[in-house]
Amino acid sequence: MGKIIFYEDRNFQGRTYECSGDCTDMSPFFNHCNSIRVENGNWILYEHPNFRGHQYYLRRGDYPDFQQWLGFNDIIRSCRLTPQHLGPFRLKIYERQDFKGQMMEFTEDCPQVHEQFHYHDINSCNVLDGHWMFFDEPNYRGRQYYLKPGEYRRYNDWGAINSRIGSFKRVQYLN
Image (cartoon, rainbow, N blue to C red; front, side):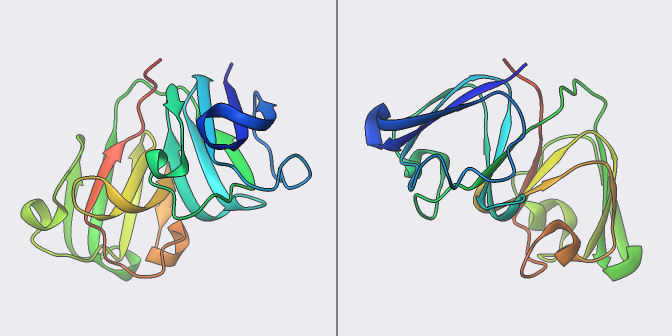
């Protein structure tokens, strides 16, 4: 069971909203989100209702301001508790759409996609086991994209605006 507390102001001040599971629209509960306390579980936060917009992966800990979770702004409108998955992890990435071109399989985190894959772009992928986060910059920085098991024939299938992926990591349940 998860538990996350959203605070309207920085440093855990102002109006709060507590959540223990998926929430498709938090708009009625607060205007801005400037700090968060994750007490249990791993969470994906979204900038827009219905799990859309910028995504942020948070695990247990305190986030006194939105820059601490690499937020682009102080807007959070929906959240999702990630499933507990301890392994195994398997991901196939492809140079081109529809699983074409060069392919490489991963079972571990990748801080520098270009060094491992020799391409900057990932145009399709197949998540065989586990849940993963893609980042558009190396070393787990920039925009984040949550991928659960399944086929992603094009980069926009995982919500990206382009195919440039700089790094990715496993979403491990660590509490």
